[in-house]
Image (tube, rainbow over all chains, first blue to last red; front, side, top):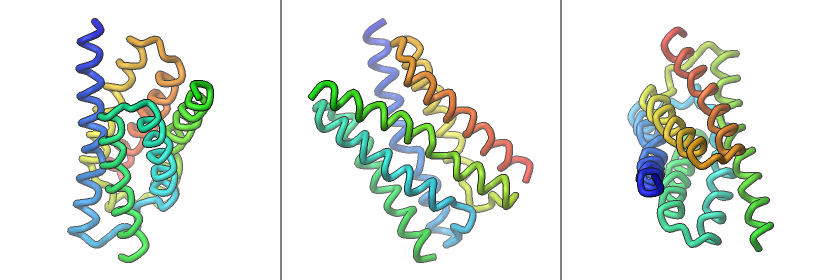
Length: 84
Length: 84
């Protein structure tokens, strides 16, 4: 049960890291971001910063890596939102 | 340090639950979802399902609640994406 749950958590970290890849890709290709909420992006950045600190203070490497990836994708979305 | 980190996790759960509220609101008001990636929404649904099972099997009530909220918001985004 413990191993099964750890494995599930790993899959969660991987899918979580992937979540915003298609959104960043679509925004990049279409150069169209009008329907993206700036507040979603800003709250996402706050949230991912919190989980990054949480991961760092807990020495949780998969969590740190996942949140660094989501932070990079969030910053890309913010940049697209402000410039397109 | 332990208490401080628990408190940070609580703030993370709250901001995580709020992340997609402005996006759902904007989609609802504008009826415009063309710039939202369907793949972001689908991967988000898979990811939130994984963390929901993770939370349930770990009897982690804040995690269960946060993921139920994000799941409801994701389903709203999916519904808007498919019908607007």
